[in-house]
Length: 304
Image 1: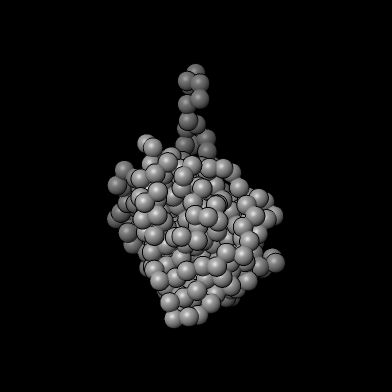
Image 2: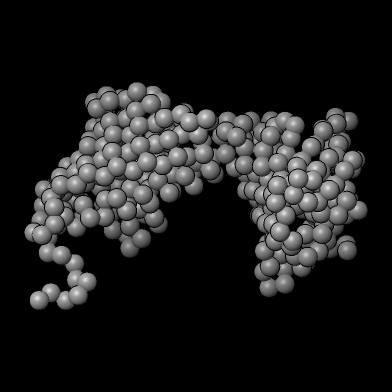
């Protein structure tokens, strides 16, 4: 009698399997489609959790080939590839999906269809994949097929989010209660907030969910920038979430983490699209400005 919970023998497992997975991504359909057809994107998310892709080559056209070498955390390489059969941008992809050994021999032979449906600015993705085993160990590979694809889509969701985000982190030599107060007390914030050379005129700061933080930022060239923020979430002294407006609209999340008496602050700004994020970075130098703002906060805290 086999031991309890021991894996089933290979000859007791099916040699073919089909999996369907549906996922809704908070990203426009064109961006999700691009993540499947641009090697720079796909290399960042394809494969199970903690796996990487040292090789990712995509010739995205009917009859074009794709080839990816996935690398496991233990350093083992697992090649896969196939040929595109159908491409309807940004609606549908159909491609063969084969697993190989390092000598190029087929282990699994498969076909994958990915359907991209627009849903109110988000994207519903339906993945239908089936595979047939060609070698004795194939049934064990088929057993992990759904988990592997699900983990890939988890990584894709994270990749899509990061394409729309600016994330800036800094460690401050101050307790988080003080750092949190610097972000929520109008007496403090107008002494440091903004990039180098900028000042602000405070109009309103009502720090509660549904409350508003309104101010005018004055640039060194005399340009005024109206800022209207609505607080969505406040967890003292751990977290602030607010919606920035009027344009561009984005959601800002500021977290305050205790780190041995110091404070690790992470400022995460999420835009509606990757294009909007890139425009703000290039036009207004948002990353440089964010780092300058936190440097001014550090100087303020040191002086307190």
